Amino acid sequence: MLLLLGILLLRLTLGGSYVYYVKASMKPFLLLTAAVLLALAVWSLWQSWRRTEEHDDGHGHDGVPRVAWLMVLPVMVVFLVSPRPLGAFTAARQLATAPVVAEPAELLPLPAGDPVDVPIADYITRAVWGQGQTLEGREVRLTGFVTPDPEGGWWVTRLGLACCAADALSFRARVLDAEDLPANSWVEVTGRWVPGDSGDPAIPLIEADDVERVPEPRNPYE
Amino acid sequence: MEILALAAVALLLLQPFLAGRLTNPALQAGATIFVSIVIQALPFLVLGVVLSAAIAAFVPDSFWQKALPKRPGLAVPVAGCAGAVLPGCECASVPVSGSLMSRGVAPAAALAFLLSAPAINPIVVISTFVAFPGEPMMAVARFGASLVTAVIVGWIWLKWGRGEWLRVPSRRHIEGQARWQTFAAAATHDLLHAGGFLVVGGIAAAILNVAVPQQWLQTLAEHPALAILGLALLAVLLSICSEADAFVAASLTQFSLTARLAFLVVGPMVDLKLISLQAGTFGKSFMYRFAPTTFVVAVLMATLFGWWLL
Image (cartoon, rainbow over all chains, first blue to last red; front, top):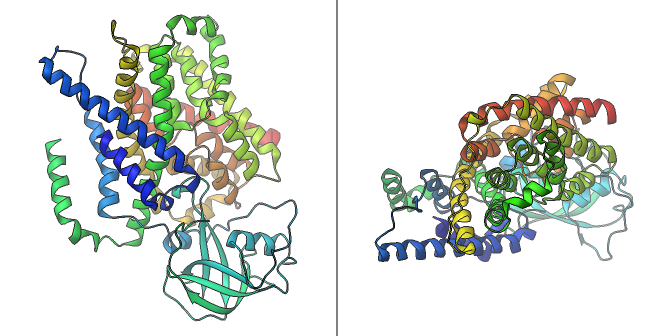
């Protein structure tokens, strides 16, 4: 049982898809955990093998408790459903709650070069808290997935994790002047900041010059 | 068990057929959240299990008699404060406190430790501080309300709790065995139990995470009293790790600060995966009494501290 779970953890971590579920900085802890699980699994296998050899002393081993079999479930789910990173479904559910980005102490100017890549959370910070001063006159590129607005148009969206996918927060910017795209397609939006909001003061606008479809990044979260 | 094995084989055979069909977005999101809760919690659970096995194998009983005051009434607050040094989240504290009890620490004191450890350790306090940049009192209020709740619940248990409600994890101390042997046996045993219950809690939390309509939250936020109760319940349902919940609370901007404080105080003490873990470690009759009591005390303390400090 522990062997199975340890192998799952090891596979997800080394295969890189662990970033779908938890923050990338968890990697060393996951590897350590997998090592402990595997060590304990090997130890108990060796124990039970030795006991069969010795024809059992009659106590001190209670086998695997029933509830432990439930640990097969995560393994099965990964194998069967092969869950994808959270996307537009989760982002759309959060439309009612405007996620805030913490007010920064000061905003540094954007690095040189046009267009400049900006994380969406950073874009929101600069637009909402900095009144767009650091964005004015610059060409920026946002990378995220498409969350369609039921009333037309879409947001370029990225989910942010504090710890794991259960606490994902959505960061969005409204894309103006772009044709509709299917939900969850990954795009690079190159454009300029424009003042105003689309009804929610926490969601800034971006006037798109160019929208390019791109493959999903290795780490889908910000 | 055999049925489960059969089901597993059947599912594996059907895998190519099923994988194409399980594309419903809610199901996908639920599955991702389920797996992520389990993967996120495992390192902490393993840390807790290893720590508690180490306590069982390497720390002599006499240490606890010396370290904690003799009178249980005094031991409760001391144990509550000791929670500040275990840098883990709630999954780690369940096996550790179980192991403390089986080493002769008064249950009330071990329970105070169980409640305070995930809420007031340095990592959690710092992350709360970071998540509420304009509100430094939030971290202070969280620390205070959580510690006071842990101590009060410990005292309640001391006064009214009955021994038979609580199944103290049996003491595995086999004489003549090597210490490492004891250590590995204790760790494997705890992990097999706690891991299963973690899965149960993870499933429940994932379903609710996907199924609770966001409009309910909007309606709740408009009534101050309901908002506090509503966020406290949400904390129970979502089962977010105590090291991350501050960021989620910060994003619930339509709620009052006091309501969000209730979210932060209740979450690390009572939530679905924790209830499941506690039922597995201490027994069901314990869990039925302990979880509601803790919930009520935590909500009251959060309200009090919120009204006083925020």
